[in-house]
Image (cartoon, rainbow, N blue to C red; front, side, top):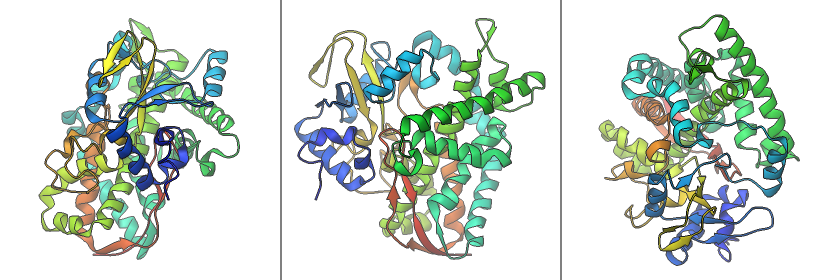
Length: 414
């Protein structure tokens, strides 16, 4: 039984819905058919329009001058918004910026994440790390929780190495990320998710303030040094700006990739013909990576705000209206992806997914994420003799970023 079918708009505001992917997608498919831009209203959240179709999401993303991110780029409760406004100072990252400000801040690290730069500086190290974490699977025996034992740590180590965080501090970064992105899940957020998020941000601030001071005193070649010593209009970044920059790279740089890796493996194990296709033809791996990202879509949404009256998908949008871009729904849109509920490593347009966004806000780490997934999948396929699910996967309860949190598997490796 699907409890969201009677009022499918609730799937966007109920974290529990995201922990039941099949039910979520069933409700989203109904919306795409019957009410593709529903008005979602509730006591807990300010009203917004939810965009469920791929074409409408692309339309809004490409009009970044008319639909802004603003500081409220992620769905938050009325209470959370009111508390943030009362404090008057929040972490403001690239996902909260628009226009010239966004261009200036993105420029600071943009070159470090370009494909050529990543190939030169990281490709060999990422390949070695992929081997190390498949070795870890072998060391664990013939069973493990792939999400908790492998998928969480592999991309974490990659981005922390790039950022300049020592390996000994990686468990702390992982725990903080889970609390920040997974605060809606009782397992991570506890009984008071707002208090958990505030404590998490304070911990991040303390850690990265110390890192800023260290890199300004003695710069190195890592991204932390790039951020700590960056200037905008000739002035160094303030404390809040540097912390914000570190946080978005440290968190988004691994959590989304780990979700794609864990969720992608589930898809392969639930579709053994696709796993066989990859093992028979490893040249399919790059396309399979995009299909995995489409399938999982770890960033479930972003918010946009109309700066003027507009029409989107035939719906009249008033100036100031909030729009939730449902990437998770757009990536299963029947109008774009043939048989979208089928996982297909040969899908000819898998790369047309919107999981990384589009236009000026296209994900800074997209090329790195693809590199990591390709490297791990290539290493695993070369060494696995057999692999299957050993239990039911569990998913995070989160409206913003999430994916599998437990993936029990059994396997034999060479």
